[in-house]
Image (cartoon, rainbow, N blue to C red; front, side, top):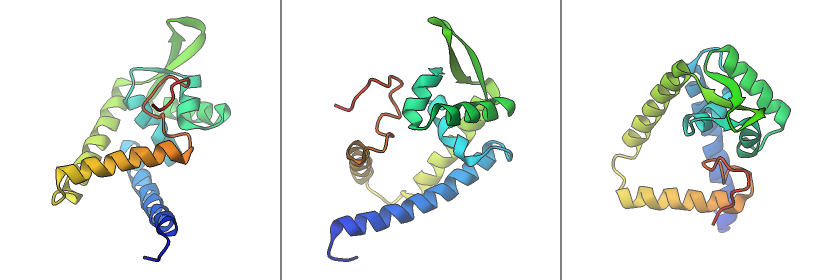
Length: 159
């Protein structure tokens, strides 16, 4: 650890993200060996919502529409998600996990939660809550587009 806390933070985040990419690859493979790991965030967002418009997914993933469309095509081919007409707007389409997709993602999420529980079993619950709040605050100031990942409305702003 150096004397500059921001430099230390950047270094720790770089290492954490590197390890996170490895976890994402493993989780994607656990869902389906053919699943491209870049599609894992799409599946986790769909897991938290009944269905979402493609425009909402574009905003939540902070990706180009063509990239999100290719990811949706990919997970649809694997039988993990499906597109259907939006019941509120016939011009739009919504995307949702299929039953099989939800089951597979649920199993991976449950495994991930169990893994975090095992890793943090000696931590005080208050420390875990503090870490969670600090990560939310960091996401809010980072401006990386993920701050609203839990909010399906692209107009939603952090309070």
